[in-house]
Length: 470
Image 1 (cartoon, one colour):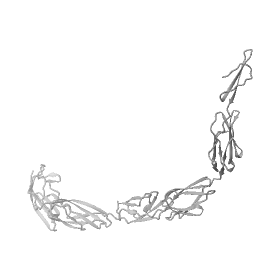
Image 2 (image 1 turned 120 degrees about the vertical axis):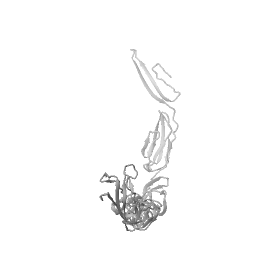
Image 3 (image 1 turned 135 degrees about the vertical axis):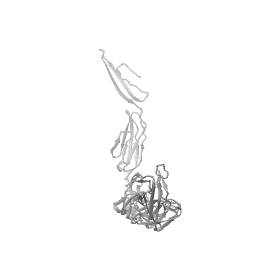
Image 4 (image 1 turned 90 degrees about the vertical axis):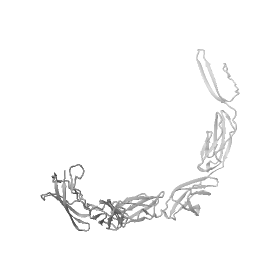
């Protein structure tokens, strides 16, 4: 650091460039001091600056970017066409038109030292092409649907179309336009790029929706006829991007490819229709007719003789069918034998307790069944009335058990010695317990008369006496 204490002037030579600060302090005789400073730059003459341009051939709408290396403490002096000046190190100039083409100059200055001027030539600013097209849809929704892409681009020498995937065919027409068909429906993106002689480009993109009318579907049905409580199941094949609109009797509607309709009444029969839609394109309506709902048969029967009879094998039973709405029948007699007769007669050859089931079927496949019983058949037995019984509550012979079977009609009367009737029943399963009007009768001899009609419709009569013991 150099210094001096005299008034000067001084000539100082600096060995290094850079920013320098000179400090002057003046002292008065009365002790007052004044200090002042001054800053200046010591520099070497800068080298001729290098210039770089982003492009020398520009397209209208581009940005010209000029740049030069950084220099410490330097200021930059740019000048160029159309009155351009700038002190930025790296200026950017919008390429608004041909007027910005020409020679751009630059010198740099550090302090009072100025570099040589360098320059760069921007050769051209070309008019940028404009990509543009319009679209026309031909035979919308039909299988022969096509799209016309009408080129309306400007100021280009080269053109490139990008139609994406799924192109079925394309035909070139006037002015670089195209007519295309597609293999499948859905959204498509169409891109057109145009280029000028000097490589200026423009791109234009449009989205389209290829909507092909769905084919008329075939409706599947789960069965040919229906009964009450069944479920009607209708369906068409599921397809991606398709909506479904069903309609039918009773204002029925649905929006799925498969539907189920409970058969709760006869009004669900009739015509059902479905329309398939893709975008704005709809298929022809598909229809199916659900036939009239069949009545469910009501299975009913009675027997001759009735079940409230004691039987012994072999015994013939007549089954009378009183079913409603039935066309076919299936009997199960409970002893391993069956029949399809409407009203069969069956001979039971073995003893046992049997339940009889009748199933009634309609021509439409509807069915209903009923089971009745118990039909009690004992082993081959003869008529037997005990000569004594003891209703004393010990569980042995407490009732008068009459062993009589195969009577269609039956009654028993019991009298005391005085001829007064003390018991009567026409139920073969009801037995006398030795009482009259709820009171125990005395020990003694009583007399019975049994009247009936056998399975051959002959009247029968049995009589005798029985001793009541206690």
